[in-house]
Image (cartoon, rainbow, N blue to C red; front, top):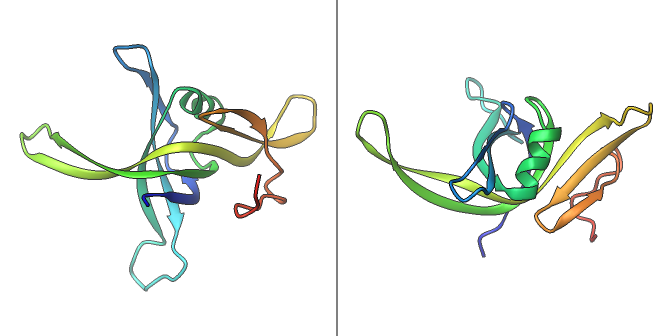
Length: 136
């Protein structure tokens, strides 16, 4: 089984673009804090991610650098040729579901967390009530 579930922070604003066929795709990366840290090593691991269509548009609208997000998806390897002509292979997370866990001001003074998936949109519990292991 190839399944990934992570909570981390966006390292930059998501980059939304459209394919030649008109599909929305967002590229972003997340930093996930390490549970145990060794002296002199980074405090986080960094992962490249891609999401499509509704999830991509949602993340572009509500996610920004520093936002805490929850993602589920799968690992994929991809080869490409760099500007220097060298062929490279990278591992990315193809995101199926994404939730922005930070509270967003809805303009009416109340604050709530927002979430979406590739199958629909819904409101999620606040970040204080979020349980990634609860059955939905």
